[in-house]
Amino acid sequence: MPALTRPYLIPSLLVGLLAFALDRGHKFLQIDMLGWRGGEIVPVTSFFDYVLVWNPGVSYGLLNDLPVWALGAIAIVAIAALALWWSRAADPLVRFGLMLAIGGAVSNALDRLLYGAVADFFHFHWQAWSFYIFNIADVAITSGVLLLLLDFVGIGRPKKA
Image (cartoon, rainbow, N blue to C red):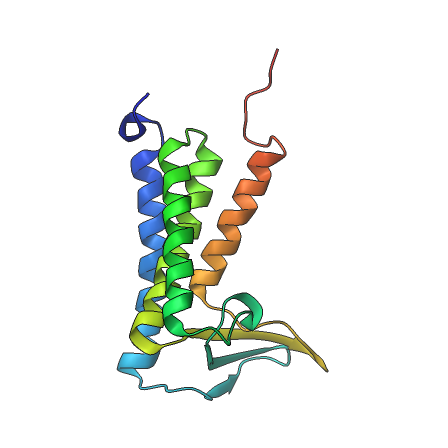
């Protein structure tokens, strides 16, 4: 079956676009409209702060010593590989998972192009423990990976007789 006639094509594309749009809209509001530049901290609860931190690397700050162009090249290859996988997939969890990951990855890649680093905002912590700071795109990517893991263990697939 050709990729463009497979089930869940349009709904999964819309989910990927929604993930991208939510992250871009949030960053536009905080950076372009409200003028946040980095280092802002708004304590919300005793365990959550709303902040702006620039991440020059990838997840958890990995590879932050690489130049922006190298991180961009890695992102392009990863997004292209995910898109190819998506174009060949038929299972709904796989399609939706990949599109969530692609939507988030494209938005974070756009941050690198626009700002030279990824804007992260949400910081959970407890006493001396600190969870990494993340953004809406990271939530989309993580949710996408969770859907792929659910598919991998067989959830969402019809039972075989």
